[in-house]
Length: 160
Picture 1 (cartoon, rainbow, N blue to C red):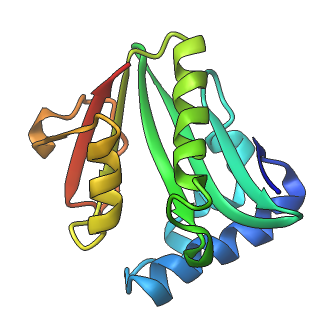
Picture 2: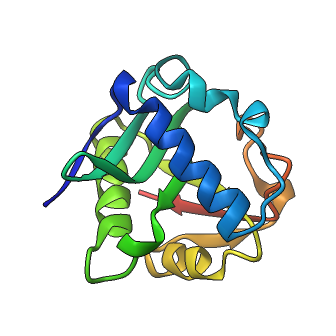
């Protein structure tokens, strides 16, 4: 059974392993844990103000993640949306459940606009965001409070 729950400290190593494996081995994104110190300090970085970090688990195995950064001004940024390869697709619906959880939390907390950045090579992720009502925007149209990641090439927004 798949469960979605907020981050707990004991999940840190599993989250880091899942994300780095997907980034480095599956998609050859040249990024290391040293460039993602947020993953080693999730409560301080993500679980602040209206933000949070959620984990999808199959039994006790971490199989997916998503995070919401509260940028202020009723603006949220989606980060760390990852699902283990074997658990992707409509059969499990994990990505959809993670996004739904994040969007519901944003609505409850009066966040009006969501933004995210991703890479061009992540075409399945781009199609997923577009199916979920996100619109491609130019980098220069991002709000000034958006926390840019150097590797991102495509940016999306959604009013909720």
